[in-house]
Image (tube, rainbow, N blue to C red):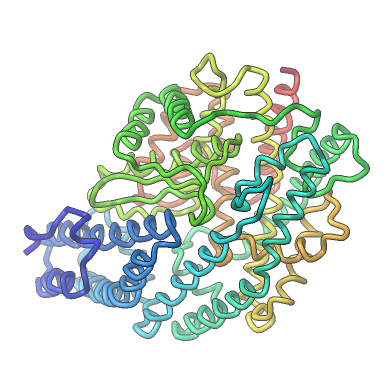
Length: 567
């Protein structure tokens, strides 16, 4: 039966459920024993990769052009007709394996995951999960349509980003207020969308017999190695250790800018008045120099990136109608990753590509595994792959190494990256703590006004140092501009934990870059075959939530920033 399963994505991305169904029936019809379970698993994973690649290719298509009605219709068909039926069939196949009592070698962790997923599954949640995904695409559509007129041209809000680097403070403020006004114009629409999200998510948790959506997501995200209480401990470590360091960073910026108080439009400009960094002038130049950097980090990683360039697996420019943000996804049948970004000619574009490149390398390093199902690699380690790559690449930003900058500008870019990394932890705490509050207080959080108040409270706790007076509406609606809250609930603490792991890998690289990169690659190559703490350990880090480990990372960042400032 499975010898007829196509590997041509142009065919299977148009499939209906009727074309998947015979393969699932075949899997369910086989009596499993120790002699045939390995072959059965191989067939199952071939089938899973097929519908997963179809799902991801449709996601890529709908984010590359949010205005394409035909793609919208095809995408909607998949989530209305195909996805619910596939998920129901997946549940039956998991139960078939679990009922057999077989435990194939090297399959202990996937079995643990399947038991959790099987216990969480409810048939009545399938249309709700499809609806939830549809709501997330509606959020992308609203954000993707946000444009303003600047210098006589219609531009996306993202395309204003270079203006925030301009040394003219009045110009920055004008651009910031213009962008904010456009975003606030969608305040009601995004708030209404949030209410629909909350209704759907509350029902999903109730159908699963769980008291709240947080517990539902903890199980769905397969978080076995830490608890919500560990997250609270991490938030406290950030408040105790990082917030004071962030205040020092903000105060240094304020003094160098020579202003009475930092305002939101003062956070991206160079604090001593230098012109904005211009790392590249075309997307091809961005790709070419990034490739040279990756080759310096490791020749094999550089070759992985060249494969992506040759096979048109990069979509990096920003344009009207394109969804916001950046991501890397996987085409598992084809055996290739894909990187999506919104590059507008600033240094953040370089960091984004280095970051997403780390995700792409993770996929390349795991395709040898017989049963690797990449979205079951813990996300807390998936983000180590990306964040560590940013730091491992940093020494090669200079032009002499094939990168973008003079030594002075490379030092400047690295300082900016390290300070942003430090300042990210408090913001991450706001986003994560907001979600814990929202799903522990479902009724309250279903009213956007209460969400505004809670966001403001968390902002005051974790994000002092910037003056938002007179900008209260802009501040309190910050939760509406965080895509993860809408599209990937609870997917944010991973960045904070992973950044702590990445700093430890970077610490190792400062002593021996080649050894640190080798350990990093070994960690990536394990896929989902070992636990989260073990993945960190193999890569050369410790999975931690405590203030002591955080203090080591903050001290390292501040020390290296001070050294780079001498350049």
